[in-house]
Structure formats: structure tokens, C-alpha cells
Length: 141
Length: 170
Image (tube, rainbow over all chains, first blue to last red; front, top):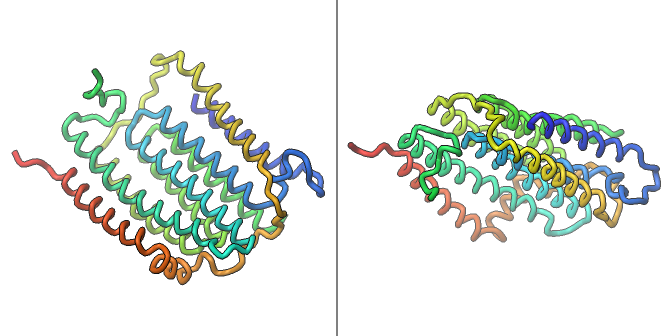
């Protein structure tokens, strides 16, 4: 299943690039946004990264790998924030730094989250000797 | 094709390869290394978008501090490789793959339909939005309250992590 998902992701990524290059100069049509090199490319990349992270959360059973996939999803949102901050910066907005500020706070909160989460994993491993999410079922029924 | 587009494509491939590596590696340690690769690519993306400070922070905090924590815990627990369980939840494969492809198609659809009003032809980020000066001024004026709240959050995280990871006395 993983390999299938990967090949689908790579195909879509290449398709996005190809669609961008195949467009006529004057643009138009549904893919007009992709013609403008910039923000949309970063948003596509962030979407791909988010989907990869979500696939990791849903398919892996090791809780540490699930945690790393969540970090991947957080980074996808960070990429979105910075892409749109740059977009507004190029528009000449005076509050263009807001997106970067949000990213800074997301990174800080992610650091705190990683510390707490890994401490929880350690404490749980000490009690139950497992990191498999299927075996963490004490509260089930 | 400008130099910025080439840089974008190269690092986009690195980021995607790193992310997919997290997904497909059996050994959690290799997953962590793939994630570091992905983070370094993201730092390059931030710098490409004119967010120099965040690019450096991405490497120092994410690829440095946070990933050291992950690698440390993986080595401390000495977890075994993830085994594949193809027989379990076989029916989920037939639900999950179409749903996953649908999610990707949705993302792709939304992104291609979005209308960017004015054309931006210049990929070069100008101005001083991402510099240390602007970020620092913002942190100590407009974002002073969230900044201080973050300090309290980190203090709580430190105390909580120490308490949780502490070995109980017999």
C-alpha cells in the first residue's frame, strides 16, 4: 500500500510540474494559477507534504514514527504560512511578517510538544514495554 | 526556467523524498534521518522565500534540537523494526487507497482552481520581512503577549517532561 501511495504522490507531483510547463504564455483556463511561478507551487508542495504525513499517521503502527509524521504535517502548514507571507510581501502588504511570526510560534510549540510527547512515550514504554499503537489499549472497553 | 525555479524543483524533490522516506522506512531510525533530510530541504525553501531567520531556526531547532530528541529516544528504547502485517485489516486497504487518492485529488483540485488575482512573475523575495531585525521588532512589540505566553509554555513543557520521564522511586 505504501509503495502504491508513493507512486501516486510522485505521479501527481510530476503532473503538476508538467501542467505548469505545458500551459500557453497568456495563461487562462483552470490551471492559470500554476503558471505563475511561486505561491501555488509552494502550496502544492505543502499539500503533498501534508498528505504524506497523514498517510504516515494512518498507516504506521510505531508511535514514534506516527509522531514524526505529525511533525511533517506541522511543517507543511509552516510552508503554507511562509508562502502566503511571501505572497503578501510581494503585494506590498505592511503586515507581511505575520505569517512568519505564526511559523515561529508553531516551531516553538512543536518543540514543547516533542519534549512532552517523547516523555510520555518513555513513561509508557517503561510501564508496558511497547511502542506499538495497536498494543496500547488499556482504555479500550 | 530561472535559477529560482531550478532550486525550487531540486529542493521540492528532496523534501518529498524525505517525507516519503519517513513513510516507507521500516527502521524508525532511518525514518528520523529521512525527516532530517526533509527539514533541511524545507529550510532551503524558507530561505528561497526570503525567510532567512526561519530557515536558520528550522535547521537549529527542528533538524537540530527536536530531531536529536527523537533519535535519542529511538536509541534509548531500542525499538524493533516495524513488521508488516498484510493480513490484518485487509478490507481497510480497499477503503483507504481510494480515500487517500481522493484526498490527493481534492488538494490538487483546490490548488489548480484557486485564482491568484495579480500575476507574480518575480520569484525573488525583496524587502526585509524575514530578517532578524524585523522578526525581533515584531516579537517585542506586536507579539509581546504571545511571546511571553510561549515562555510560560516552554517552562511548563520542561517541568512536565522532567516529571513524566522521571523514574519512580521503588
